[in-house]
Amino acid sequence: MERSDEFLRDARILLDSGSYSSCISRSYYAAFHGAKAVLFRLGHDRKSHHAVWSAFGKHVAKPGLMDKGFHSGGLDLFFEPLGKRLPAA
Image 1 (tube, rainbow, N blue to C red):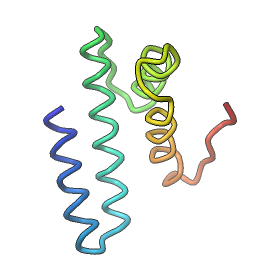
Image 2 (tube, rainbow, N blue to C red):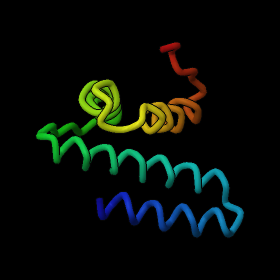
Image 3 (cartoon, rainbow, N blue to C red):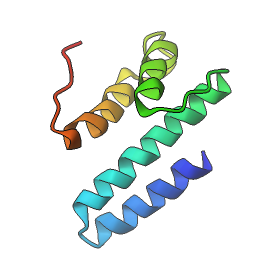
């Protein structure tokens, strides 16, 4: 969670300075590393972004261990800068 906390602190600084695009990027990485940490605690080690969000949905959001909004929020931050739309759930 240390990396997640670091990216979140950076995002706040960037937001306060008006660097909104960079703030979104740092916010995504805060969510990504937070998701990785939760998965690791559950015994799932994933590296790629796609694998992390897929496993997070399967092992955390779908069984109800966390609000599904955390999963979809991370996916929104991942897909929207790429110009892609989220598939309908």
